[in-house]
Image (cartoon, rainbow, N blue to C red):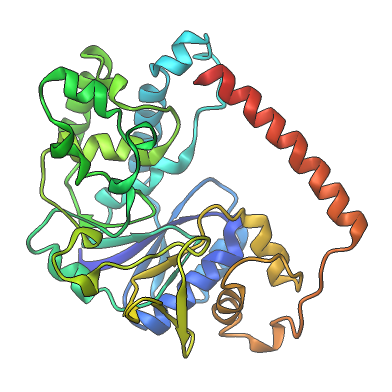
Length: 342
């Protein structure tokens, strides 16, 4: 057992992002902190090669834990109203390995920090680990500011149960892209109890959409009734920062980003809403117009700068047209799917 460490979730599809994250951890967190990669699926050839090249990085290999979380996700989503109402229980589209990130609760680190692979670490995690001496969950996001119709949990349904008021729930809402916690919190007994509440007592109604791991994780952290701290709700203004590459303004100081307002240090940069294929293309020298793409390239090729693209070129008009056409098709398909399941 190790006192602390870092987890992420990855496969070969996010290889470039994984390398950048690992390099940023080595430079900005610690060269010696252990990191464990949870497999998103079995497509791990390049990931395994990268792990083998690093002395402090391992692959999570507890198959029983992986299967347990896969089963839990499948059982819960299969009874979600969106699935049942549209007779989709026999389909597999809603099955996703995203909840495997919760394997972190079964791993070897007594205290841990989880980063989504589409992130760059920007500062040491000492303050996070220290908070875990006083809280069971640590977050750093602004989910609690979302409107009721976009909130991670169905606040109206929850209020109608009489168990919680909106103000009791609101400050506990969070995302799942970055969090800290402790080993063993969600054991088999607790998971069985949550399944009973969700399925037999119909608390699945508390979760507004199916498939989303963050929404199910929100339900779990609320219902287990353990202590939670979110840095964006800290009484200290220096703790409250942005983290999203596509929304928040940052200042680069020696390839470390700071909140533009007040130059406050941030825990991580999260490239949410950018598909992994963009980072593959960027790493191959294409200008994909991602915010903070120079910072990404810095960390991606930190260990092999000779392979870093010397300049970025735009895609050809033909390539752009083809991609836009495929994007339009996928958008229509997504709209049709959402119309069916929501």
